[in-house]
Amino acid sequence: MSRERSLLILGGAIVVAIIVLLFVVRPLYETIQTDKATLSDRQTEIADLDVQLASINDLVAKYQAIDETQKASLNKRFPADANTEALVAQIEGIAISTQVIVGNVQFSDQTLSTPTTIAKGYNELGANLSVAGSYENIINFIKALETNDRIVTVDSIALAPGELGLAGTLKTHAYFAATASQKEKVNTVKTNTTEAQ
Amino acid sequence: MAFLENVRQQFAPKPKATTNPTTPKARRATIIAGVVVGITLVIYGGVFLYGQYVSNQVSSADSDIAAKKSQITQLTKKNTEAQSFADRLTNLKGILNEHTFWSAMVGQVTAALPKTVQFENFSADTQSAKMTMTARTNTFTSVAKTIVALKSLKDVVKDVNLGNFSYNPRDVASGAPVRFSLSVTLNSAAVTTPPALATPAATTDTAPSNQTNAAVGQ
Image 1 (cartoon, each protein chain N blue to C red):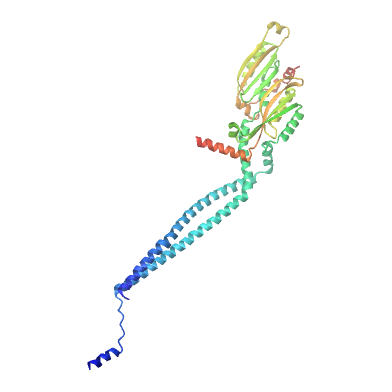
Image 2: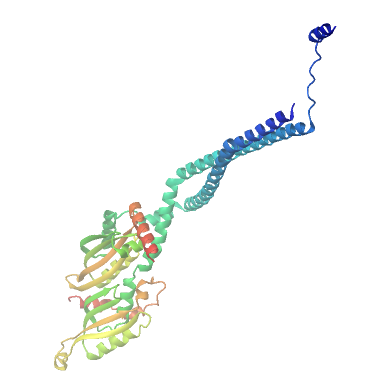
């Protein structure tokens, strides 16, 4: 083999090597770099999902560990919806047991629309009760409302002499949970407030 | 002779042309070319295999993510239920903080009043933490005693203001009642504190059931 031919082969080999490195290995390497970046993103995502999953598992485990009677108790005290029929039935029951006449129950929803209620994150169901009865009975009626299964808060009491002793109006309100769409609204408002600050 | 010699040379078998022996430089160039090709192949092979490895890792991560997402989806219903329960528990704290116990408050206030005082009108409001009442009694002293009695409920009552007051000694002497109105500013914490935690009420001996019942339109 002549020296020239050997040099030609060497040159060819170098050229081929450069071509391979530039047009085969380099794109492959760039793909690998992209894949590595993707892998890094995926690993971050996996870590996030692991945290999320652990949190969900923890929450679900805690929830499942709660006694069904306690869940039912919460549902009674703070139901998922307004359930005015049940509230009327409870008020009637209290009225009968305390011998107070409830002449009228007027409901007004205070749903999550005002800044105050949005900040609270739950719905309030206003109920104005017209009551009549003796002092003792009306106080017992208020006491029974205060300790009712469903939480009823007495906002104001206005009593004056009446046929049965006292008559007047009790302004009260009960509560019910926010719906999923309301929760989204609450979260949006809270986020906007935080960002504005 | 010269001709014969010439012919012989022409027709005689020619000796084979000897190849040029490879020079050391040429051999080195060939070796270097081989090395270059070898290194290139090794680099390519290495990069290719590493690429395969990374690609497999990405695929594995993708399937891992899909599995975890599927796991989360399966738990979504339970999670929503649990989250809603947790939210409601949090809300419940706020609700209980604003819950009022007027019956105990009214009981405490009325229990502290002299028996001769009879309510005519009564109102109480959580927002202002005020009780306003119009009442009647038989003497001016009873009005003063009422104010003192209410002011003695220091844990519950912040301030007592006497409003309208009608008192005519001649009318009182003839049995006409003394009418007055009071505005009682309450300690708002006392309104929202459950009775069990609140200051014990005055003794039931002074409970005004008769007076108040008597007051209501009798």
